[in-house]
Length: 255
Image (cartoon, rainbow, N blue to C red):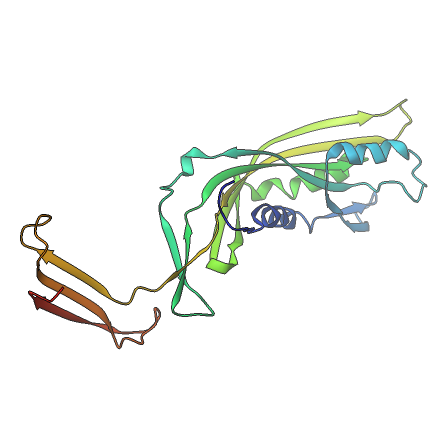
């Protein structure tokens, strides 16, 4: 319907991977009464809705069950998309890059469309100490933004810096059943990532010669008074080469 050839820059996929990589190296340490570390564990991270993890938690309340969901853990999911009009630029602006495989061709792409992607990240634990350790390893890095660099369109060599903004933090202490039933403490953080979506990449030839005709009584006159021509010197020069220009002025040229 849009009249374009297929294109896919994996923008959302790259954004999800970049977001998850920020939280994939968080550890919790447990100590005894003398403050000696008795256990250190890396917190598992996965993508999925919070309800899915809660369902698994409640289906297997026995802590000795091998299929039991292990806590603490971190999960995240995309919760929304919004157009960001404040970052809008002229949609006719164009970026160009020399084709890596053919120096006589240029790649052309129109400027991006700005969107904000909202992420929900939840921290789930069975005791408050574990949850607080995870929360305090995240919050200090967001003031309230943390900048990510994503290789957005490798074909065009475009790398974007995306501010990852911590919007809010909520807390819930959940029980299912009686007081002795397994407890789940959940901290939910909401983040906004300022993302750019790019359209298709077009191919175009490199312009190597320009000709301008001047008329005395344009547009009624059909006789060219002077003609200006310019081209690279040497004419075999490519876009990235160091070269000059040859200029020619012709008076009353033949049509």
